[in-house]
Image 1 (cartoon, rainbow, N blue to C red):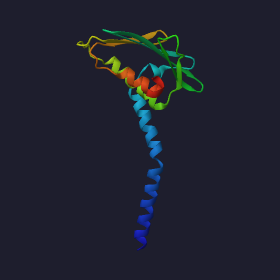
Image 2 (spheres, rainbow, N blue to C red):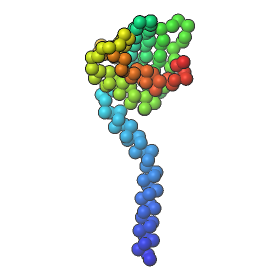
Image 3 (cartoon, rainbow, N blue to C red):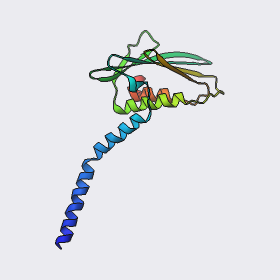
Image 4 (cartoon, rainbow, N blue to C red):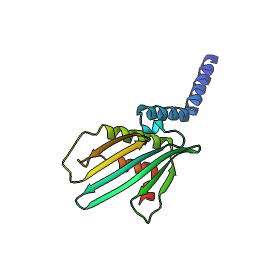
Length: 159
């Protein structure tokens, strides 16, 4: 009987330890995901500014906006400037999941296949210091920018 009690105590200790470390495991998974994509945001240093310039043109629209991402001692911030003189910029402190979302956005954009078949074109220019990348979508298939903007600022804030 003593053997079974010892075995049971060991199982309980393992279970409690495993449950207590779920948060730590989640943090480790996020860090691994963040490092999966090497992007401009990985090179962002204090007082640097990363710009995402977005332009979309179609049959009945022309729209531009800019997201500015910058690092300060308090963290990494994003600022959304919509092409409008009446709206002030939206600013938010970025979470780890937002930084991961940025890495995914840039990686997907860099790997966009040239495509046609849509009257709407979207152009993205991402720049940090003297480095920049440009990609575009003319097939109405890439929604990464809208997902990123929603991740950063939230759908209810943007509307």
